[in-house]
Image (cartoon, rainbow, N blue to C red; front, top):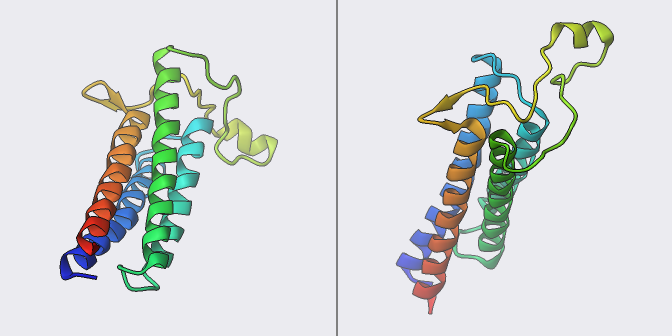
Length: 162
């Protein structure tokens, strides 16, 4: 494999790790530092990022140009894209374009006392936005963009390897 192919594969792998780390880290900071409690659909967006972190970290156990590393990186990109797709669905619920789930979440409350102290969070209400884009919207944009970037980099690596 050429140096260019190796470099592109290494970049793809790095992006596949950086994107979910940044987005999941941002979600955790917004919750624990910013006081923004996640709704049920927010939780759904976090799970694929956790999977993507594990897959992309596993990709670092082999040289970037190997089939194993590239496959794990591609699977991580797929998990990132799934989170982005859930983010799109969540934005649609927030905007009233379609109905979402009908239950609210109590963010991990396990007892009646916990439930009474934790705010109920509705999936159809935007808690925070910037320039009219909610956190779900930002997740959708960055997740889908990040997954696309990983795919492009892997495509360039494959093309350069020929």
